[in-house]
Picture 1: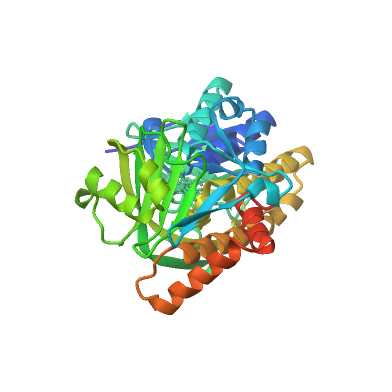
Picture 2: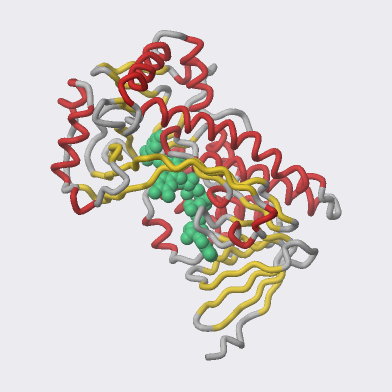
Length: 399
Ligand code: FAS
Ligand code: PHB
């Protein structure tokens, strides 16, 4: 059946993906008077239903403030000065603020960040097309790129100056780059995370990262009444094999006695298994196509860097695009975009890989590897220098 008859339009920047990267970029460009469209393959409800990140670096909070979407974050977010590492049955606090001249993190779910950005975009009257099918990108190696998509059976076309690939790891934009023009770096970990969301009070005031012989565990939260828990699990685990009681017993078995005693259990309101990988695509710019966020890189969530890296990419990309339009079409900042992002990305990749290597049980690791983990954890919790290195990475390196 013909798909002819769709719209033809023109914008300055076409953004693919309405996750945090795409929405935050759209908001910052809108505030600078730059016209965008966002094309999203899923419904807004589906995007909001994905339970993901929970911790915002100080730099990400400041960027959301600049975007004008931080008022609810400041009302409802939980500011944390520290985290705890639990190993050999004992908890040790890492004083993030004390080790980084007062820097701290804010616990505020990615779902809420996305909701705030969606509300701001709707209030601005900027165009977002949800449930856009068959999105394809064209001619981004020239001066007149375009995007096509199908909606309600009709094919629509958008001409633009730039395409922002904010469509995540499985998106279409990175896949549209010729194989010879891109280089991928990847490590897939031999385990996953089984996550549970529950309307129960958090087991502790701060996050607890656990190294246990049965595997990693994390006690996090979304508010003072809603908790987020994870246990390391095998890659072939199925959700059906993990009724709530089994999950609560397993995480309790990995906690120190006081936390195990304090754990408040309840029905899960979300339960999912996520694989863990480290991934970077280089470069992040291909002519007038620029990648940002998970479209260009993935980190294991152990270091709470994924959403925060997306935010710093968007900081660099929005600055480069604003500079382009403010300087009669200069490409100087666009030319620098990829290198600026990758410098910070690789340091966050290293930290996320290091935290993952430190806290998880590797199936083929052996006893010596476990002793190395225990020695490093003992050093970390006994050395101000070592703890400072962890703290300055956890709160976020400067943009
Ligand atoms: P996203 O993947 O969030 O958004 C991309 C958007 O593009 C999606 O809405 C998708 O539907 C859309 N899209 C894809 N293909 C498209 C196409 N062809 N056409 C149009 N639209 C398309 N980070 C942390 O910091 N802490 C965590 O605990 C954490 N947990 C995670 C758990 C899981 C299961 C996953 C997958 C990620 C997790 N992350 C975590 C990382 C996550 O938060 C990402 O860093 C963050 O979502 C990145 O945002 P975006 O770059 O916008 O990508
Ligand atoms: C979360 O709350 O989902 C969370 C927090 C910290 C992490 C990973 C996930 O490192």
